[in-house]
Image (tube, rainbow, N blue to C red; front, side):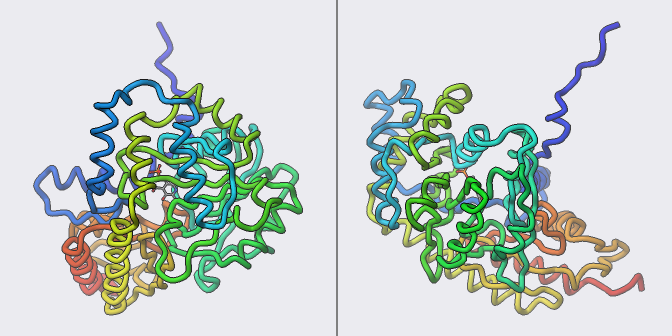
Length: 403
Ligand SMILES: Cc1ncc(COP(=O)(O)O)c(C=O)c1O
């Protein structure tokens, strides 16, 4: 008899994306006709602006239907270099590789830098895919906790304490998903000093850099040539231009590292779709009005959500400086009962919010931060208002014991 089909050990260790799972669960309920408010996905509610969509139609008609150059179209890479220049970052277009979303840009980077058993330091709370991708390439993700009382900013001494001879890279995500923390220049400089002392790569995920509400996001790569040489900057079109479905992101680094990244891409996806790249070029060239309008909407929604959360007993929330999430502390709610059901963790809280009041959020466990939930305010005003109503209704119904 033949042995049963076997999957790789990798397949058993890499978990599914928790944010996508929360959204899928919400979708499954909605398909059964149940009213669900999904504040779980990091996805702008707006449609991609019309001039970008038009550029894609035109590109298809103009024949952009064939394999694009492996690293991306030269004029797009040049436009990315120019956009970086406006942020005070100088990289040549040779260091830019356009990929299928920032997600692939990060995976390419890890494939290029990480050997089996190498350690990659990831400050938590962290976006769900960093640790999964490090595991996928055979590396070892090493968490280092950031604390709410420090504004979720990584303390350089805590970083230093996690470095071992096997450490090869540090991941920094500013503005951060899920906390919204934005690192100040001096904070980045302190971390860069530690990273350079230990000859680490810095994988700087700056996908939310255009979405800040007070101070502008400083790029790691703007800290001088020495730091820029050790940095792989990750960015993309998804969040800034409401282009999540187009799957265009990029990595930016020294040309020598970029060549390795291109090799990884050449053996996997061959890069982002031709017409999506042409649309991204139009996005980078259009005036800022559409992006500013989306940013204004996020800013208004951020204030609204914070003000609503303030009214909910047992929830405390800090003000995010960037991205489009709030990350409230719900620890005071734990131990309470909703009917006969005990809320024993933020994971249970998220599950009950979905099953009992039809509100999808992501549990902090997904970000290695139990005791918190992530609420996206990239949804429409109506959905956010309804979501806040449902959350408040649920929390007010909690009882301290099984009465
Ligand atoms: C921090 C962070 N990095 C990267 C990504 C991936 O973005 P993309 O759509 O460009 O793959 C996301 C998307 O949620 C994110 O939140």
